[in-house]
Length: 335
Image: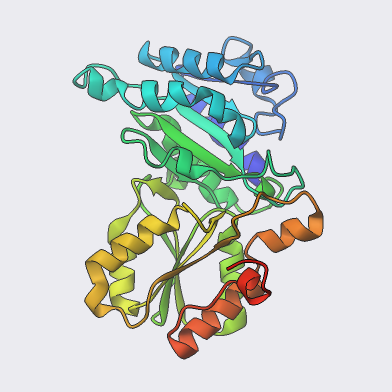
């Protein structure tokens, strides 16, 4: 399946298994979704369960919160992650707090899907990841995807979750193909990272579309790296990451986020706090520069950490034990 087809399959299987599951969003019914991630669902399940909405994220996210409290399992689609900005109050102040405020009497089994990331030429206002908007919200689970298989499994697990879950979908992967096992065996456990590659020299933590880039970089560099796909950002899998770094004694986080305020800072801080005395080199992050995502295809490609840049930094880190400078510092573009 293509990545986007795996998402359709997950929605279809959950809607068949549970009549309380319904989907809402802009152009998700008649048009099959702006990225065809709900294609065919309207014909199969009808307009009561597959609903086009007005262009008002605040309204339909709020409707989703209310529907979830009332006993449904709504899946809300936010076309671009940036559009969630006008509905954050519904999600982080409403959905994420309701279980706590009601002393456990109310649950909000709401799934919010949003396409994220660069690489598709949508420019600075439609290409951000913005996971830092939601990862610091207690009561909200935040997950992302990297393969067609875990796209299927993560989305099904998110819909089944008893609490609100934010699902970040790297839109640059929607056309990627891969084998997909459907059914219960294809589900992914939320809160559990995946060890993509075993190794002993360094632990690399990544997620989303950069999983493939990291694999390519490690193969090119020849470094015996252990690669971890984080999958769940909140709450992230501390045990898997800490156990890996305790073995390798080194940590690199590769993330599609700006150098300032990226999610990897939390990983580095926790590892430094827990394993400082056993580290053989300083942990560091390979990130995007602190600039808006460029529209130019050439510049956008440079913006995202590419395999050759990841390999360069890994090689220097392993050979010298020092933290390498990013490309924009080496080229004198920024300090």
